[in-house]
Each structure stands twice: as structure tokens, then as C-alpha cells.
Amino acid sequence: MAKTKIIIKNDKQIQWIRAASKIAAQALDMITPYVKEGISSEELDHICNTFIMSLWGHSACIWYHGYPKYTCISLNDTICHWIPSKNEILKPWDILNIDVTVIKDGYYWDTSRMYTVWEISEQAKNLISITKKALEIWIGQVRPWNFTWNIWYEIAKYVEAKWYGIVREYTWHWVWMDLHEEPYIYHKAPKNSWIIMEAWMIFTIEPMINVWSHKTKILKDWWTVKTEDSKLSAQFEHTILVTSDWFEILTLA
Ligand code: MF3
Ligand code: CO
Ligand code: CO
Image (cartoon, rainbow, N blue to C red; front, side, top):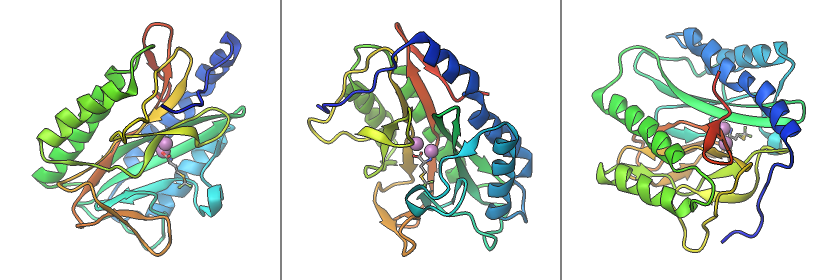
């Protein structure tokens, strides 16, 4: 069991967090009509950033461990952390994840969702709907005194029964006064690494699901993570607050 735990201290902080928590989700709503054939991922990145700044927030990604852009935009067989580029032009059959992490008033929110450009394959449709359902199942397990172990169990039962792969290397994380705080929690449990959820914890849930194999590879830029077999991958992410009796999704518009 992880030793550290992050507890939110008082109601006032939670009020602040709630008040400012909408920007990240609003950015993902705002960008939807721009996700069209012919636009570059760099343009999408800039539009998101301009929007976030217009609401007095800023991106937590830029220069995070040297990361050079404001958002992560991951296409097709990219699992996460693809660096937006002017050479990456959207095609009709692309599926993509846009991931924004916003800082406002010193607090962090992290959320991502999937977008489609035009006509996508049945396989891509299934992948996206299974990944979305996976996030919902996971969130449904969030409540005080539940074990993260139960979440893993439920999700593996659902995803692996369909022969999809749950990416193991990348984690949930606590989000509070920093983008990634320990303890990191895996989506597929290594033994003895569970946590008991308690009221006023905040963390992300962000399943990455691959068609078939869970295996990954990292490109030479040391950021971009792809599926090892070049099959499609999808991800959805929310930042969640554990309340006294249940949960609250902070990253809703
Ligand atoms: N938003 C990502 C997450 O969900 C983190 C991105 S870090 C970056 O954890 F540096 F790549 F932007
Ligand atoms: Co995250
Ligand atoms: Co994120």
C-alpha cells in the first residue's frame, strides 16, 4: 500500500477548486468544432491555449519536464503524449485524444477525451465506446473507504473480457498543487500497491485502452507513446474529488 495520501484540508479550498474547475472541460468542448480534416494538431494546441489563457488559466504541460507544447494530442496508434505538430494534419479516418491540464489559482485540473474527424472504422468506434465505458465503471467505484483494488478488478473484468489491452505503464495521479503527485496508481494493479480512498482526495482516472495488446513503445522524442503492434489506442480522463459519501467529477463543463 502506498504510504502517502493527499487530503484536501478545508471547505474553502474545495470551493475554490470547484469554482475554477470548469476551464479544462470547457476547453475540450470549445475545441470540438475545430477537429476537422485539414487542421494540424499544432493549430488545435494553439486554439486550446488561447482559450485557456482568455479565462485566466494556463497550461501545466508547457515545459513540464521539457515538454514543448500546451496540450497532448495523440492520434490513432499513439497512446499518449504526442507532441502537437504543424506537420500532423488531420485525416477523415483519424481518431484522437486531446488532453489538457490547466492551472488556475494554483490548482490543477487534468482531463482528456476522444474526438473523431469523419468516418471511422467499426473497430475504432468500439474502442472508443469501450474506453469511455471503462472510465465510467472506474469512476463508479470511487467512494470513501473503497479500495483501488476493486476498481482494477472491475475494469479488468470488463475490458479484458473483450480482448482489449489495458496499458500498464502509465498511471492515475493525484492532482492538487502539482500536475503529477505521488502516489501514482496503476490502471492494472501491481501487487501491494492499492490505496484506500478517503473523502477530499483528488486524483485523475485516465484509462488507456488498446485494441488487443496492452504493450507500448516510446519514440525517439522520448515523449510519444505508441502501441507496440501499431493498433489503435484510446483514452478518456477526468479529475475526481472523493466526497464524504461518494464522488464528484471536477472536470465537467
Ligand atoms: N495530461 C497528462 C496526464 O494526463 C500529462 C501530460 S504531461 C506532458 O497525466 F508534459 F506531456 F504534457
Ligand atoms: Co492525468
Ligand atoms: Co491528462
